[in-house]
Image (tube, rainbow, N blue to C red; front, side, top):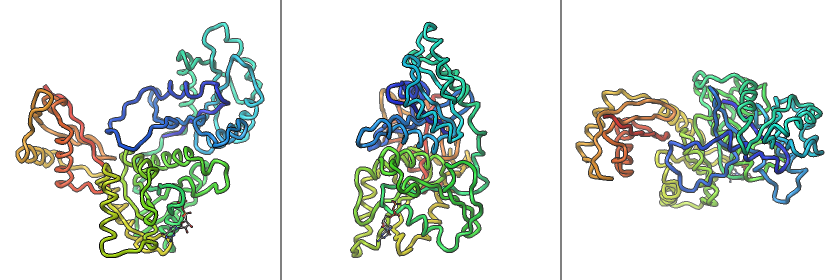
Amino acid sequence: KGVVAIVGRANVGKSTLFNRIVGERVSIVEDTPGVTRDRIYAHASWLTRDFSVIDTGGIELAQRDFVKEIRMQAEIAIEEADVIIFVVNGREGVLPEDELVARILQKSKKPVVLAVNKIDDVNFRDAIYDFYALGVGDPIPVSSSHGIGVGDVLDEVIALLPDEEEDDHEGEIRFSLIGRPNVGKSSLTNALLGEERVIVSDIEGTTRDAIDTAFEKDGQRYRVIDTAGMRKRGKVYENVEKYSVLRALSAIEKSDVILVLVDGERGIIEQDKHIAGYAHESGKGVVLVVNKWDLVTKDEKTMAKMTKKLREDFKYLDYARIAFVSAKQGSRVDTLFDLILEAYENQRKRVSTSVLNDVLIDAQAMNPTSNFEGGRLKIYYGNQVAINPPTFVLFVNDPKFLHFSYKRYLENKLREAFGFEGTPIHIICRKRD
Ligand code: GDP
């Protein structure tokens, strides 16, 4: 897919440009409770390319320090992005902080697109020539607030993005472990890799992929995708919360299956719900992992109680299996491979159209639709239109007659009939006259 990061000193118009690029994209996934949308990461497209965009300006240090902050933002951009948009203010000329950013970017050798912002009309156009001095390429005049020149910047960006990867990595299952700091992501990764691991390849290439590890287990190839906290120990930004969210989001994007870790000893906190919400929204396969189970004083009811709590707190993840493990002792860690495999296969499952329609007919016969919004839903037929996750389009008399609870009911019927453990499924209604 490709990642684009926006950098530049404070108040040059990074967020305005970010919003211009991202536009108002409406998610087809229903809102997930508990997910706050801090907009520093979003999907965008231009012409034929899809990519994600990071506004590094949204990643701040607890103590404001503009120089440290800008250095951190540039480092994050270099680490995360394939192409960097460097924004400067055309009305203020080249400032020392711009030079600092330019030097850091130059050293990285990442492709840079230089956007000279606030060139709102032709009178300011000559101002862009000063910026050649930064030595990071040709300045492109833009006005983020007026939407001028943004297309030129994006033309340049997509020309520099690496070629799109095959979506199917030839049967290799990619997964990542996400969760708040200290939940045991690194420990569990090591436990999963274990003794049996066969490193298939050491991934060279971009820095971004350097820590991803490929291995083989029981004849199946896997790749575990690195997330925050699993490297870069000691970097200033390692503990910046937005940075860990960013890392989690980019790991999610590269994965087929997400292991959402919670701490069995400490229990579930708000931050866990945010993280789980991102996993759910991605449409990827999800396994809920309760780690540090060795530290919990247990009786015969403890596991059931924890399960109940997880089901309550992560209602939207009702399709995810729950595993209780100890990364430290290595107990039950191996069971995770079956769950990863199951979620992966169900993500890619295609069902037969005729069986699907039988299920829809049965579902309506057992539980007929009732009046809602001035009418009664009639489902004519359905079709699976996509995998990753399985997505169904139902052709109906009018989508507005679909009550949320009836949608839930249909989803459950599809799950019962076909078995979609570990993966969300999407149901979309379309009007057919
Ligand atoms: P990360 O920040 O999520 O990568 O967490 P780490 O893997 O660094 O683990 C944080 C701490 O929890 C370390 O001290 C680990 O030894 C400890 N830890 C991780 N998993 C377990 C577990 O299953 N049981 C116990 N008792 N400790 C664990």
